Length: 219
Image (cartoon, rainbow, N blue to C red; front, side, top):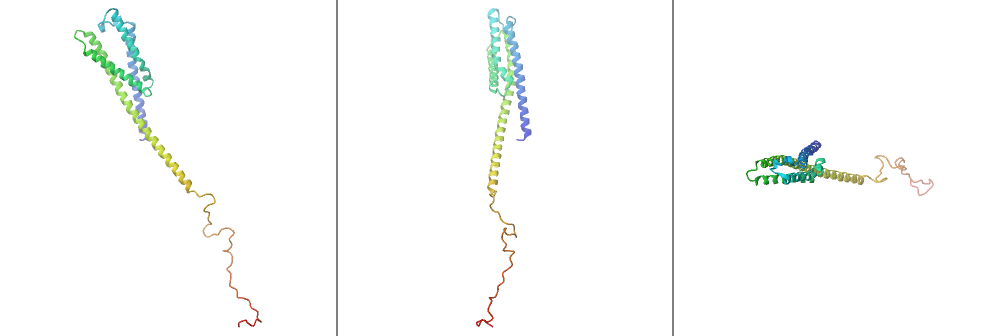
């Protein structure tokens, strides 16, 4: 993969991470707001749940406490969703379970509870929007992480092959180099130093010397 594609992929991954941070942060503070309101002023929210009295206030406060417990998984996702991808999955699972639970409660309600039904409809709509956004960003992030991991493996294999080729070339070059003093020959047309046979004049065949008084001398 070209370098520009890798850079583009990394920018996309960072954009997805920031999208997750923004969505999770907005969800966190919205839930935290309702949790604080339900815990601090339960009496002011009895009507929206069609509750009354001390039991109703206790139920509203319990809902606020449950929301606070639910938020404990969000900070790690807001800090770094890529590193804490498993926690991100837990947050998404919480959203899905909450949405499914609210839908089951709403569909099982009998007629005559319009106020409570309206409250549940608001919660269902908010949960559905948040769940959809988190689901899209989660899938997008997983796909990008898989592509990055695939590219890293390809790069590692290419680097390993290049290192092996370089090592083989170095070994072949070392084997091809002669040892010091080996295969030394004199240049063409020159004899090794100390050989004077070429410069010596050719020997001439000399006739044997004979005595002129030798009776066996041929005429």
